[in-house]
Amino acid sequence: MPSSLLFVNKLISKYFGPDLLKKVIDYVKEKVSKEKRYENARSKYNSTISSLEYVRWQSKILTKIYGDQPIVHLFGRNHMVVAHPSDGNIEYPFVKDDLHHFSMLKSVEIPEYRPDKTQMKYYNIMSSKIKKPNLIGFELDEYEVNHEGQISSFTANICQYRHTVITSHILEYEMYQLYKENRSIADASVEEILNNLPYRNKIHIGQSVQDVIIKGKNRHALMSVQMMIIYWDERSQCYKVPIIKRSEEVALKPNYWHIIPAGGFEIFEKEDMHNEHVIEENFDIQLALFRELLEELYNGRDFEDNEMGHDGNEIIYRNPVIEQLEKLLADKKAKIEFLGNTTDLTTLRPELSFLLVVDDQDFSKNTFEKNFEGAVIKSVKLDKLESMFKNDLLYPSSAGLLQLAIASSIFKEKGWDLGSVATSDQSLSKERITI
Image (cartoon, rainbow, N blue to C red):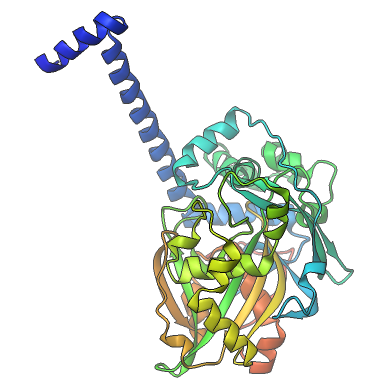
């Protein structure tokens, strides 16, 4: 130890007890070492779940469990997501179409949840990528689904993001653990598979497979919003779609291609905001959708959080991008349609899905700029999406969004065709679930 530190250590020892400085140094070393272990564990986890071998194995497992549900089949393969279309024609402006009556917030009480040892281990591994663990969001209570499998309405409660991490995101982590320990389990019965996936099994207890999909029971499944944007690019004389490749800075599925904007249906307030009226005011799907658009397509750092306590409605609706978009919508040069819901089978999280089509040459003059969630941002020609995604990792909810979009009234009006799309086939061959 250098002489200067020895002197400081002697001085501290004289007044605060022996070896205090050494204890502080040891504590810092241990903390750094622990963080390094978490980083290594997270890196290994992300690398594994992005591998084709793991994706194929996981697809086999999830197809066994959820094979009787409408699993999305797109561009020649199955994607581990279920899609339910809307039962009505809901378009912007959503107030006139009563989107508010389509959704109802049942409770604004923050749930209590005590994580167990495994949940805390997973949370610690992912903690450096969790930006706002205590931010309030809206979790699925239940979707109302008609006999044709269409969504007619939904109810929601509130939760905090950390609740979703340890009850929904952990579902993929426990599958990763099973993959490391017993890959042959993929050939076992559904009952045996679920017995080896305790967190997923807990969700299934007392519920049918369809109930697991359309209800948020036994977990805290934060809802999300996503929107496929198709805009006319004047320079290229074609329609394009913005997408990103997810970066290593995200808490879920890095390295997957993702249609943006997409993100959690959360309040746009300070993290410690618990006022019931403010929470209810934030139960606004359109507000969440426009915030995600600013955050993910225009690198809207001011919209990643609201720790400054701004009035969310004011700064979002007065933003020039949103003002331009709303004028285009009013002038019938753009159209937003609510498509339905997708449920990612890996995490059992639902995502309200929308389609925006812009037929205005000035919109393409806007410069798209990714935020931290994207490693790469691209605008892909609409008729090239199949070749873009066919042999690469596509975020499950994005696949569901694409299927809903292809079946939409807008696609039919435009005469767009991106290839054949089908629902699940319970007799899937190994090749059908391979990418």
